[in-house]
Image 1 (tube, rainbow, N blue to C red):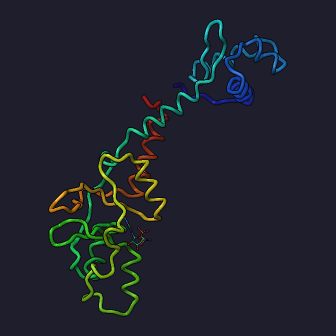
Image 2 (image 1 turned 180 degrees about the vertical axis):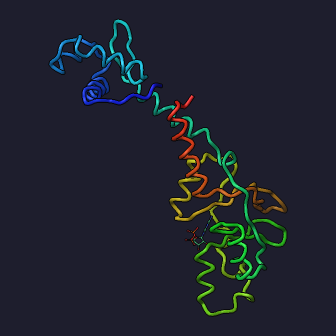
Image 3 (image 1 turned 45 degrees about the vertical axis):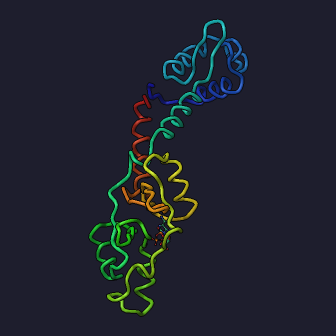
Amino acid sequence: MINIELKNRHYEILEIVKTQGPITSEHIASLLNVTRSAIRADLNLLTMSGMLEAKPKVGYMYIGSVERQKIADYLNAVRVGDLKSRPVAITDTTSVYDAVVTMFLEDVGSIFITNEAKYLSGVISRKDLLKAAIGGSDIHQIPVGIIMTRMPNVVTVAPADPVVEAARKIMEHEIDALPVVEEIFKDGQILYRIVGRFSKTNITKLFVDIGNKLGGGLD
Ligand code: ADP
């Protein structure tokens, strides 16, 4: 698709074709109170830029909806597993103090917590740690397992989930990140192995990627 600078006349034509297409150039011209030749160049430009399609004997059709569909298809095809980052996890016996240090060193806003067997048991965020720190207890002594948000309340995603689904979970639960997990069935129990991290940063990166792709067309 060619990027062009649209003028008022182009927008008027696009609106007419959007609402009344397929429509002939004579009809468009009459609605604009101009001659057909007055809009010939504009129609050519809009057709060449991929916004309108000229069908012989039928007229002009708006194909902006095709572009929209392409964006929707592209978004639906991107899975959590394609974008996920490396997870940062500590065990539930780690002290609050060490969790704060890990948060600084790893430059993340939340840390996933595992039990002894290394399966997901909770998550801890900046605010959880701040709360514990101002609570007056000895942060060298309290283990994160005591203050974390624990299973089954941890919201997770699977690598095969669409990113749109993960973004919806982040919004709905007002959280910054989700552990990406694989379910393991063991002794009649479902256990969650952490295989990644999906956060608002991953969504921001995807947003920039889509912007770049749209600049050059989505194909
Ligand atoms: P912040 O503390 O910076 O506001 P969040 O918004 O991610 O970070 O966390 C808010 C609360 O939600 C915290 O109590 C945290 O333990 C909890 N939380 C964070 N991530 C999840 C998750 N994936 N599932 C369930 N609860 C979570």
